[in-house]
Image (cartoon, rainbow, N blue to C red; front, side):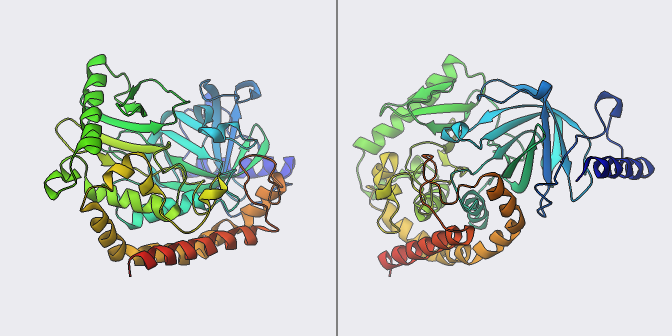
Length: 415
């Protein structure tokens, strides 16, 4: 919108909010609105998230928290007040891309797009996924299969420091909380994430097999708590490597098999490269209980979009060949349990393929803005961009054809 239209719209919005008694708290502490110029990138039928950092400071890393303000716009008017927060970069490799993700920490708990109140949120850029659908599809599949917790998300467009940044996923972050990963907050209850050995985020523990796990909860882990988790992982890995394969040696006494099978099959169906116990693998464990796999996260390298060409085929097993999964699948009954799970739920996986056109329509207008801002559809020069496509529809169709081949191949293994 033009500057004049912007002012008129905000004045009208302010009047409506004032008459309805819905003005945000302490309006004198911050401006009534953050300006947004959408003359070049028109409304795409999605909420527009407008962020301005203090003194328009650039976001350069994942550690420096920069004071900022945020407001959500609809078609032509602000739909919220101005929120105070801090922002920083987020992601592993994605944080180094031209279009990068953001970690948001609000001053107060806020409800965003119908999702439960919280202070911590993320904006996922999906720069390496030319369809912008892979992470969204994973969340849907996780919910349909009945995962205990699946991060909620909403498509938005982002304006950062008065510049259009493109199409993003506004998502919940993986953390312990009543409406997120609902486990006890104690020194003997853990939420941890398998990380790349090149990236060590404190606090972390290292297992006997040399795998590094970043401990997200408890946040201020004591030496005693760290030893408790390390010892349990050591005992579990000793069982995996040295334990028998008979029914009496079932992994049910170590891991929750229902959680594991759901987690495994979403990763295997997508043939997710990160899902091969590389990184972004979340688990929970409470003293005296089982290890639970989940929640699911990070699928931009799935559904045929792997960084290594040898991993892009829709055929062959992938996840079960790597690291912990390889040992787990050596146990006698796990292969049978996996087969039964697929046959009981295969229609859900097929439904995901059929739902792609619905998700594609949700972002159809915003996609035009995205690729006007980032004209990379045919680009493979950036390491994150794997395949060139003539159009967005071609990129989506290529993914859908891969998913159909993957589905048919798995079904052929379980006639």
